[in-house]
Length: 187
Image 1 (cartoon, rainbow, N blue to C red):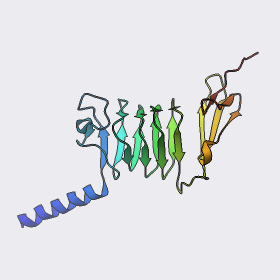
Image 2 (image 1 turned 180 degrees about the vertical axis):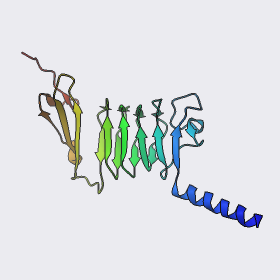
Image 3 (image 1 turned 30 degrees about the vertical axis):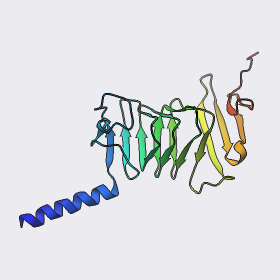
Image 4 (image 1 turned 45 degrees about the horizontal axis):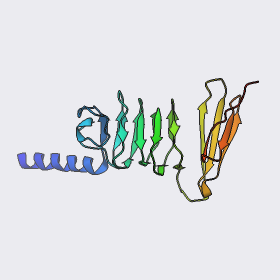
């Protein structure tokens, strides 16, 4: 009888690991490194089958790409020359993509960006279906002077367009290859 109970417990645990689990940031390694095993509860870096919760810290990923099932980052996330792959709807508050190399954010569900979002040039957003000519969506954010600004980008040829919405002033800096706020006089 005892043998059956142990076997059943092992099978249940094995099935749970195959389906993924929830991972929460606990900062146990004493660093902000996403890839430090001890920064997670349970210990171990989240994988593609895991649902991830980050609160109370701003992890930095710079040694490899992040590939998780879903992500809820309430306090922030920094990707330094890395990519982010999400299989399900996710939310990131205070998201920064920085560094020297082309990065991508690929999601199969809705990605909600809240707070301050900083995107370096070379960032590519892709939704379900992907494809070089596919319109991948809009990025919208609040304008601190009132209104808001919108950014719309296509993957094909890196063509981008910024458009004012409300009282915001968007514009493309074609020399730097990025969209953002145009420096304009208020007169």
